[in-house]
Image (cartoon, rainbow, N blue to C red):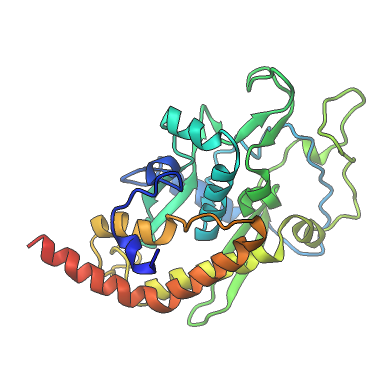
Length: 306
């Protein structure tokens, strides 16, 4: 499929119908701004700081937190591919009509923003561990898309803050201690823990934890996705907002055509080993050709409404 065709409504059949992945929201989720501000106010941790933490599989804070899990373009693609590659998962989403993510118009960027969806207060991918267990009866939980879980989930209990330096291309990256959960304390004898559990290690640092859980491929994809967003922002190719009043596009166009451009993924590669190359290639084309295609498409969109 050509890059520009993502501006056209389409049904990708068994690939990834938009209704399978997303549920649109016209406005920011209730209380989102306050929760994001709270995250920014948390104490920043340094790479050499100790992080004596070991996941028990309790799902107590990581998968039930009120803190929004905002997804980058490559994270949405990887997640959607994992849904399609997991037997029965795509059918479950179609049957229930439940979206894996929710989308709203970014209050600052004026561009579409994806968040993980919640079901009864927990992530839609939170899965009880144990035969016959339910979310109400299980003491242990796993992630149904663990191999392709978002970066925020990978580095929990840390929160990752990324921003571009003013008037420069470099990305500023910081980590904060976003939450405390039972994983900071050794499990008592007889307590339920996940297979392979080891008590927290005082020698473990923030940097070691990040290096262990956040692959280099994921980091480079996220950095390039941020570069793509910045490119569109610099060109004014977004809806106007209070903080970015120079946006040239109407919100309706942004939440239709640009939503498809950014987040409807290509067809899943034949193997997961090919995922990174497909993502990087697609993002590079989006960065280099996207702005011109958007401007042309927007003019046609306006003409059709006259």
